[in-house]
Image 1 (tube, rainbow, N blue to C red):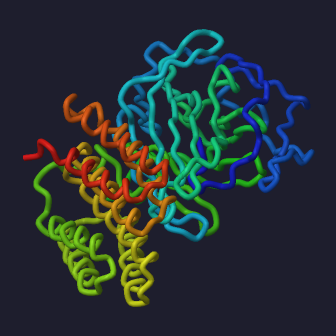
Image 2 (image 1 turned 90 degrees about the horizontal axis):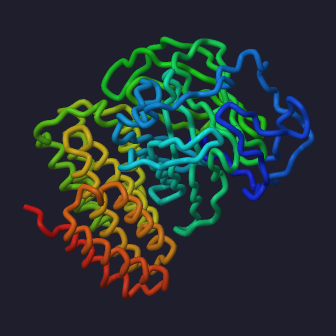
Image 3 (image 1 turned 180 degrees about the vertical axis):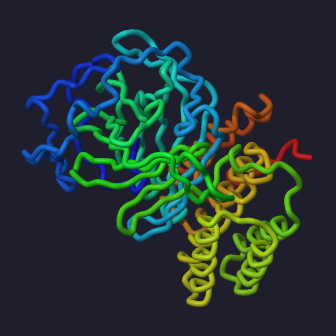
Length: 447
């Protein structure tokens, strides 16, 4: 499980040969009871040992049995129940946002003692509105209710393209499966959500249980707080809450918390009129993002909506911050900064729709948003931003393709491929022509 504050990844090749043990088997170490501290900057071993908890406190050493692993009912890690969780905060001094989404289907993973089917969750992280990391995580629940982490494919992005895949691991190949949530956590319990020393490693100690935390729309009971020891020797506290899973995390100025989750926070029904008005103002500002009048309309619509409806505290903070930034950027005639702020405002706006609209409808709107953003970035001849926009489109499409009629899906596939080819060639003229065709394909068949 990645640290949601995206602490610098350790530069260690995944070709390190490790024993592919069973679920409860520890990876072989050169020195007994010593997991070496890895220097965060160099990725090299320091010769020092992490201050590991006593083995007697570990609750992840018994061999798990998987009879129905894809039915994940653990309330503190509801991986098969929550459709999407949105997180917001700040990392490395920049606005940070995460979409954690359940994907259709399963992945079969070969462990030493047999094959296990796992649920697939997609993690998409955005720094300053732009793609920063994508990962596919695999989870399975043992018969006793504990949830196990079976690995992840990680893609870290810089300027819209993959910079590295550090943090990737696979249970049964890179190392053992790892418990990510006990069935009934107790204070003092210790477990390792990642347990491949020198590649990925975390040791968690439960600090408190049966807590009540402030949720997006009211108190949430039954939360726990844990302390997580990282491979570089640093620690951070995390909160897990029923119906959300990981609820908040952070250390220093790098903090993230749940904005909202569906279906946990869903309130199906008619979209509030003032949210509809806000969305119309946001769309206009996304197009005319350097127009002071359009920005004022967004602020007025936002203030009116906030006064009329309950809004999650994290989203209030994000929207206030991003509208303030947009206003200041427009006043300073800082086009690049205004473009980034307008994108974040649009992302926040669509998050608000999750409360009332089906996830598929919100994802369709996100696809349209990114398709429009491609046009703006192509006009600015920002090839890195265009590459990232297309990546955001592709991974969002992975989440909704299965709900799209085959004929329309084939058409969208073709337009996405056309757009990807143009972006890879850095042909901004071709991108500018292709993006509207994708938008038309997305809109086809809408009533």
